[in-house]
Length: 79
Image (cartoon, rainbow, N blue to C red; front, side, top):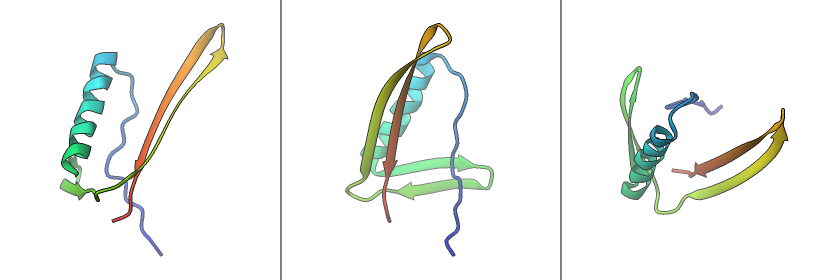
């Protein structure tokens, strides 16, 4: 049976600029083909292959008198 291990999880409210900085850090890792993460168990390096699968979608929904917009980006790969 395969084991699933969560290496990173970000769910919070940030200034838009700070959210952009997080995406910039992730983009830099993608460009280098390597993520270097600090986890509670210590540092972890995740190496990426030459090609990854990318899904990107944006949707809007009218909700409670306003419009909620959602951007989802998913990048996956097998190593």
